[in-house]
Length: 356
Image 1: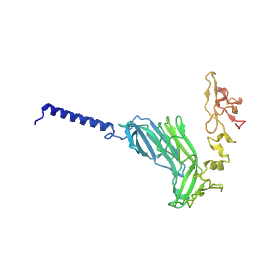
Image 2: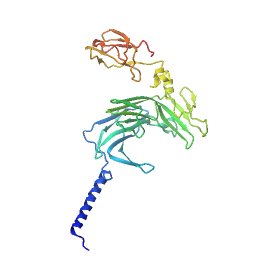
Image 3: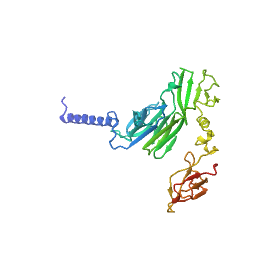
Image 4: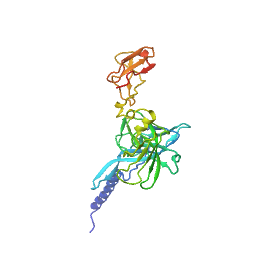
């Protein structure tokens, strides 16, 4: 039986329509979409700079871009479908700036492309350039890592511990940490013992400049040796630069103890959370002159602790540029009394009462 011509035409139209719909579906689902980066020429740049001590080298930087357009589909244990922002990773080497100790990389904030990628986070760090200086077959260990998050998502290494506004400047102390492990394959590594874990995690939403300066204290080496037998009560043994031996169940060196040994100050003075117990606080007068809106020709200074926290009701003695002496306490915001513009910048700063 011959089918009517109209029926055949309708079938052809249906097949064509089905083809178009399928093509649109696959395109929207990302199956055929171009996921490559294509940063526009006028994209804002984020510059990451590392000031590198001669003993260290920079690690390859892991750069992650995200896209809310090109989704990534995950399936849970029970088969449930979950859509997440897509991500695209690139790897960059920081380049030395001339003959200086500065290493730098520029990253486009806008990754462009069909997915409209945006810069989400970077992971970078430093390690020993020659670990064998600490012994034959010694390899690089952990420490000295930094994660900076530029959006509201977690990085592959978790969320931010510290959030900053504006550009990000990081200057941190590190100590050589030589570790031996006997359980499993024997290994001996040299890492960097610093504040926190292997990575310091920051969120810097407005940053256009990221500066990292690791300060290595090579004369203060901490050694550790893991247990040779897996047995309750066996712990890693740490030997500190002063000869003190500690096996208290910790897996990393006591950074605050190292800071205390090097400086002679109490460990509390190096902890943001324990600083209130520091018996040797070191306040500072920030150099910025803050004009007084309601008093033309006058301005104030801000007094903060070592962590940048404002110090209310704190005694100060200032000698102005005009020779005038100002002795008072800060207000509830940590600000000095209004000073005449002729006193700026101040010649001398003293804090007669150094206790809280």
